[in-house]
Amino acid sequence: MDIGAQGDLIMNSDSENLTAPDVQTLESRARQIRRLVVQMNAAARSSHVGSALSIVDLLVVLYFRILRFDLENPRAGDRDRFILSKGHGCTALYATLAERGFFSKDILDTYYQDGGLLAGHADNHNVPGIEVATGSLGHGLSIGVGMALAGKHDQKNYRVFVLLGDGECDEGSVWEATMSASHFKLDNLITIVDFNKLQAMGRVEEVMNLEPFAEKWCSFGWSVREIDGHDFRQIEDALTKVPFESAKPSLILAHTVKGKGVSYMEDQLSWHYKSPNERELALALEELEL
Amino acid sequence: MRNAFVAALTTIAAEDPRIFLITGDLGFSVFEDFAGRFPGRFINVGVAEANMVGIAAGLASCGKVAFTYSIAPFATIRCLEQIRIDVCYHNANVKIVGVGGGLAYGPLGATHHAIEDISIMRALPNMKVLSPADPVEADLATRAAVAVDGPVYIRLGKSGEPRVHSGQPDFEIGRAITVKDGTNITLVATGGLVYNALLAARELATQGIDARVISMHTIKPLDEEAILRAAHETAAIFTIEEHTLIGGLGSAVAEVLAESGNRKVLFQRIGIRDRFCHEVGSQEYLRELSGLSPQHIVSRVVGYLSRELSKDIM
Ligand SMILES: Cc1ncc(C[n+]2csc(CCOP(=O)(O)OP(=O)(O)O)c2C)c(N)n1
Image (cartoon, rainbow over all chains, first blue to last red; front, side, top):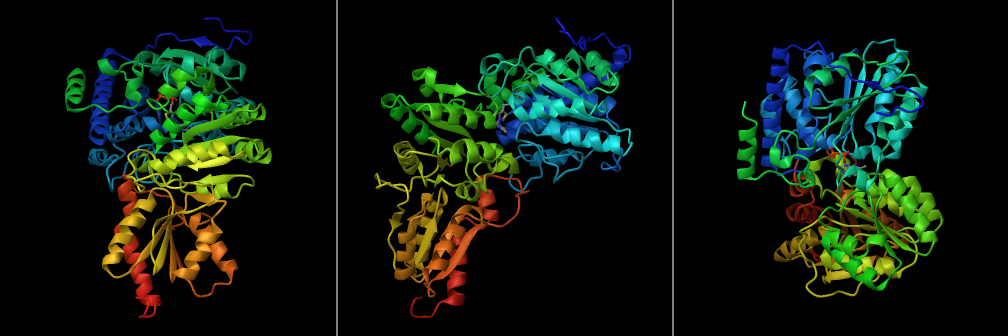
């Protein structure tokens, strides 16, 4: 890949950290979470199932291998922070948090239901483990910059991880945040872009071209790595090597597939909106057999 | 209402080459016809509402009628300063369309609820604020917005709203529509709640209360005459809105009444308390919790009147 003048782009090398059984464990967790996701979206008849499936593998590595937190005290001051800026992918986050033990899986049944605890966008008011309410795109990274600044000021060791959608990067506020993060030398801030190449009305390159995308982040002063966002070794390797450079924020450009894991949803725009009917759900669960 | 808006806009655009439609990456399975017929006048700016409004202002400065479109809070508050300066200060011919007014996006959560948009848009000089009651009014509001020069905010519901009007009412910006005549009290409602007000009026009739129902489809400029008439001809006015009680329809009506010198008419606002909604559920469920169902409106009216009113009016 052409890396431009800054030369900040670091290509991934395969991780030796994960053993084959480790990968198997992560795979089966991801499959379990995908099962929960399709079930939640089907029961609720809610949109965004494809958006959720896209980020499951990233969340699994984050929550089972990377993030430091205390389940007994999820608001402990030195915890790592995670912000799902693309809040519409919330069913993946809810299922991951439940699977990881932040709250009971029964709560997942209340997603989208009258009197339930889980809304159609990530909300920190009703369950533990969610840092901020998102759903309006383009907010998460600025909040992450604030958390990272506070961490520096308070001399804490926590890291801040922010997960953005690629379409979300249309928002000008994302680039304001991006500029400020490198200006303030926030090497405790890590952004992951879920680069699935689809947004709400079509393909990213047709709706609003982001290219040269990696180079944009480089030129905004970030240290950039590109990975396959469904390859556990690559995800783990990138996330264990942050910060990629000292005094710089880190960007992981994760190439993903919207709807990943359910063949008929993969890379299909319509699954931004549709929810699986009974037959489609059965098919999905079959494909996601544990 | 969304479909009625798009159908009207597509019809108008066929005759009026000034019409542009700019979306913030929304309108899947809604805008295909418009985009297919007028590809040069359909612009998706991506998920970038501030840019969307600035672009609309630029287009308007070159003689276009620029419609912006997103989910109501993103169409209004996400890009407020662009609306205030680029659009309103320049009195630009930009029409802002928000889909999902009030709690229409119920289970999607607080980020998608639009319960402060009316007050905020109303505060902006040059801005007109329309809040149609049903698909018929949404169609007429779209046409009226094109016919008038300058900024207009159209607050739509989403889809599947029941019809309030069986025929085509006279629709004029700033002129309220009396949906049902009545002599005892007046229910002044806006948006999708006009329908609930009608249902409430029907129930009130069985309890001997003859309620007038007004669709206040224009919140700014407000039809002061309709309010003063109601204050003169009926004993009590209730405003009903799917919106915070601060600064919306109820506040606008209260301002008129307070300065009118009418000290006799009773007045109550029915709307959403000053809080965010942390509850999860459908629009109907959240309306229920917020006291906006027809049954809640009836109880509020009856409870208040029985406390306040003298026997001869009851
Ligand atoms: C400020 C704002 N504008 C518009 C929307 C509506 N919306 C929800 S998802 C989406 C597309 C997001 O695309 P992307 O970030 O690529 O996410 P993904 O493809 O993973 O769903 C849009 C426009 C929103 N939630 N917030």
